[in-house]
Length: 149
Image (tube, rainbow, N blue to C red; front, side):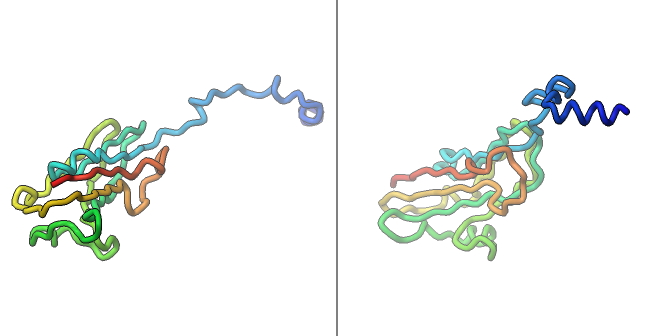
């Protein structure tokens, strides 16, 4: 008999008065949100911050460099260890995971040895380049900076 009464209430549009109220906080799940800190690349440090509400598992941070007007960045033998066939033309950094609110920094050990010809160099960083982390905002995974020499 109760099923008939509940069905009648639904049909009459009375479900809102019978149902359980929920807040937007209850509907939002905790998730990481990875954002590059692009300005730090200008001193040779690739950096990413987890601004989300949950810890992030391991992911890949990539750095791409291109000289404005054509050409590539300065080559250094130490850069070879950062190459990965899945990300051609980019330095690849394995981030072991990142707790919410924390920043991961990786200083390129050869940065201070590099000799930059005059010009401007565009850097593009991508957090979670492999798209393996379910984030609250996938649109803010890129950051850029220009190094002027």
